[in-house]
Length: 420
View (cartoon, rainbow, N blue to C red):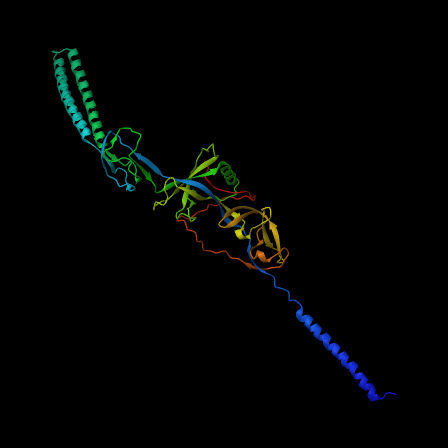
């Protein structure tokens, strides 16, 4: 028979073992709770909210610089060039003497013409006296009518000879004045094509120099007839707001990619298309006070042809491309989850893609942080505010927009080129 003390002695190890098991289980639960992963916060992305905004329709078109006026300096008389009076490449004014031709032969011709004029004037005086005398004799019936008629005809002939002699004298004066070859227009003169000692012929095809008026200056740009016709239809439908007629709406892109410092004004579009290219020439006038533009220079013209007053646009970096090249954007839904949205885009204006279809006003489009997201993922959004400062050169002229009716239908590129 076991004693009570003995039963207690055997019961204690069992209770201790149970307590050890409970402590061990509690410790394991605490470790499991400590090892459980903490859910990561949603990635942060920068977005822009799509809204209607006035955006110009801008095209980059090729162009060629042309002088506003050009004149070839030619001699009106034949003779030997004895002096050049201009500095090559300098500015000249209309009427400035550029070359001097030997005037001696023309001075002799003038003296001869003046002598002939004096002789005919003397003959006219004699014929006049004879006609007066016979007229008095005719009244006294001492001279016949035939004698008077002959004297009167002689007077008229003498008067005609005087008129002819005066014309010859005036022509000799003109030829003498033409020995000073003058500038027909104001502008910058090029190199001298003839030197002193050269014999020039009257009406020769070779010119002595060329003067070009470069301030202001023209730039002739070309655009396809198809685009121009579409612009007409867009204007007729009221899809665009027109630019005012005197708006400086064209900028030149220089070789280094910068914009020319002054804006130009579209003057007119040609009425004839080039049959070989199907393009029409548009003439633009630019100020050129520092002679930065040279005739014959190839340039690219960025022409603003209209204003789409309720366009939708997104930054360039927001556009993604599918494997077949179609554009799409990441859109944040109301529950802050992202999805890919296919869109249709137009041209790029001021580093923004014009969106034709696929987006509506109020849509939130992801611009930065697309590498961190996937479809259906929840994100944290931060509104992206575009920089307000523009580092590109500013034109001196201010663009002015006139209001015009606008239709509800959205179409392709729009413009307000003045087409006649």
